[in-house]
Length: 536
Picture 1 (cartoon, rainbow, N blue to C red):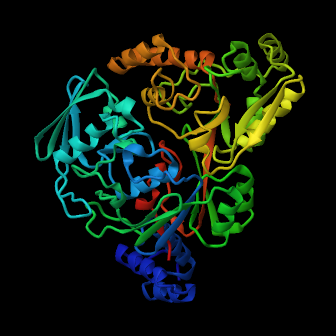
Picture 2 (tube, one colour; picture 1 turned 180 degrees about the vertical axis):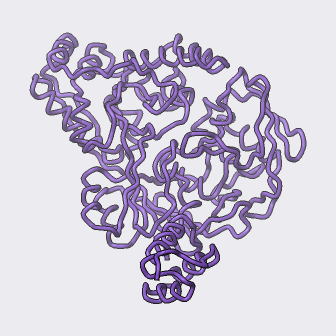
Picture 3 (cartoon, rainbow, N blue to C red; picture 1 turned 90 degrees about the vertical axis):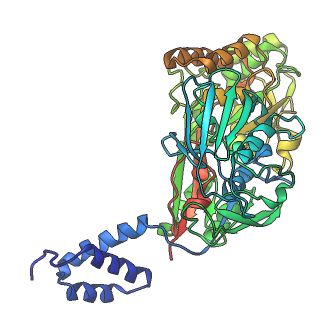
């Protein structure tokens, strides 16, 4: 008998794949292939091919359970108000956007059939036909106008109000066409509309507890700060989702989150720390790690309007005191890239490759601390597990300070309530920023004078004007030059220290398939529930 596969077709491959799904033994499969004219020595090729096909072919059914790391009683199903990763995951499950970003960062159409403009100022959005909300109402242009326009209403409290403010005109041309007018040209609009906050909701919606979206799952349970459960939208306008139901909740303690995965209680443990990663790796083939480096970072924020951050030399001293290489090596266990105190990641086209990270120099740090008059004082630094790896980072910085007589009092506070009670409020505290696709979004959210998340209260009229200029330019090289200068300004003038860009690691059971990297962050840009499947 020779080793060639004879009289074997794609239909036979499909038969083998089906038998594997039904639980056929290897002996049964080999008998099946012998009957089809396949030599035993060639059977491995068929089984290997079938295995690869199965790995890439979604399987329907099952109940997906996953745990994130952050939640609070302020959890919301209103996309405009979403601020934590748990909010983003739920919004991605219940709603859709006009566009979404693929794993390369390229915007693709979702609810929009096309988005076009001749001048980057007036945009025409054509909607897909046949899309309905969970309550059966068809998607129309009025829904899009309502969804986008509400970000401009101060009463809504949109987290992206500053970004949405550039949209000054909304018009429903007909039932399937929307015209959006910007205050000034912005070629990034299709990318901006892929942000989680710009999910489309039904016209006139005031009660968001129902999560009446067009998304892959229909809300069954939502308990803020506890959990949510969605069931498969049987009338979904796309194919999928693959799973029948999706439960999501937060386990803030990293060890507890990983132990829940190892015990089989959940299929995905989001954003585990490097120590827990080693534990998962020792468990054998039953678990996998999904790594994404997409601009997520934990940063140390010193408010410039409070003591001691209002002393410029204190800020300078802290920037020299941070040993970035040691943070990547020790706090992040090598899962990261050294940061240079500005938010545009190395993967971004607009990144300033010439801007170097501040060198670790304790002597210069001591000089500036002495000049600021803070040597010998006890300076509180607020850290929490809520901001990934911030406690480890704080301990490294504290140890460096102790060697030069700088007393840094690291105060570890609980994850619960951290984002409401400490972030943006404490004089010195850590933040954790999820990836954003454009410099314009990052700067608008975090660094303009009226930015909603201005962590260090950095204010510069020049910076604000430059952002508007870059946004309006259709010349990519000019935009890049402006963004580069803005990165230098942030690194040198703001009170934020970004020591590293973190490689996010999601741990999963090996039965979870289809998880991919995405520039909007881990958990497939928080949209994983719609796309993954559970292997039988």
